[in-house]
Length: 427
Ligand SMILES: NC(=O)c1ccc[n+]([C@@H]2O[C@H](COP(=O)([O-])OP(=O)(O)OC[C@H]3O[C@@H](n4cnc5c(N)ncnc54)[C@H](O)[C@@H]3O)[C@@H](O)[C@H]2O)c1
Ligand SMILES: N[C@@H](CCO)C(=O)O
Ligand code: NA
Image (cartoon, rainbow, N blue to C red; front, side, top):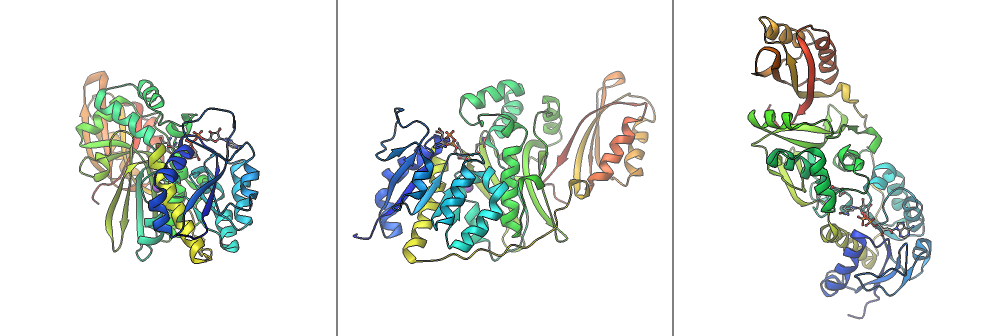
């Protein structure tokens, strides 16, 4: 093969970056065959070029701007993370006609539209398979394999740390804090665990999935977000007894021409494929008119799984360069985003009540007064320690909130112990 090699410039060499270096080296021969030209590692920007590393790097610099300005570099791989300087670097790289491969969900979920538009204008590729569900192929399936179908809904377990915590709480009765500490020890959690447990990380990923599934501009700020801090072992136990698992879901739906995207804990029926996704695994479940139900499952994080997704993107960009393809920007439609209050959802409500005559009737009529229909009710305990567990049919979120306000005013309701959504139930 005497084709001109394609040169990769790497920005950042942490967990994912070192995986990219490893795979570029170990799989060099197969990649060259698949691209039709060798793909070599060029300059690498790191924080501290003097630091000892596991991987062998020849062209080290502490200046990421030098990497994107290097005339040898064809494809820029961004694995620094965060918004700045990543945004400026990616912007400049695309502006100079280079293709960019990034794992940065925050960047794509906040600035994807401007970067995609620029890439379309410059005939460069912007690839981000690693940004959602790490090593699981989901970006290309949505953008390419499913391009002929109409996707109605995407449900995903998009954050490994929170799935790990919920699994440990459910299966080993571990406390939230102990489970979080274990996830941090295993390296799943983001440096600031708030990104995981408060749902920011999943919200970025949900915005990216919604944008692709519905050809729209959905940003992180459009995603309704609730994390898992309020989920208790009691909720998980009750859910289990009623036949559900508790999962942090990222959800994107198109209903009547408007889109809603949200991240919140949800009760998922044990029979639903997502309920069986345990530990730090991720999964994305899609519902399409023609394809029906599909599930993509695997490692959402980790050095090599994430790097594997990036290598696939590098091959895509390298092949396009070889073929002289100039990808045109995709047309994006503007679709309204539906506020969460206007979304129809099924809910689980746990109430601390007095076990006295007429209490159930009073509670039920409060739901009824707001048009929220109850699907099932359980009572646990008695006298002063009675709890009512209710699962509603789908109802407008605003109607549920109005119901909760009225329930708080009832003398017989001591406390609204928790409220969660129910997803994936047969309607
Ligand atoms: N770790 C994962 O499993 C995973 C999975 C999917 C996506 N991602 C995404 O991949 C990206 C990288 O994550 P990571 O886990 O490898 O993080 P990391 O912290 O291990 O690596 C980032 C590296 O960038 C370096 N860096 C920071 N600023 C720099 C600068 N100005 N110039 C050069 N280097 C600089 C840091 O020193 C660090 O080594 C993030 O966007 C993250 O969200 C990570
Ligand atoms: N902290 C993230 C890493 C991948 O984005 C997770 O737990 O899934
Ligand atoms: Na992916």
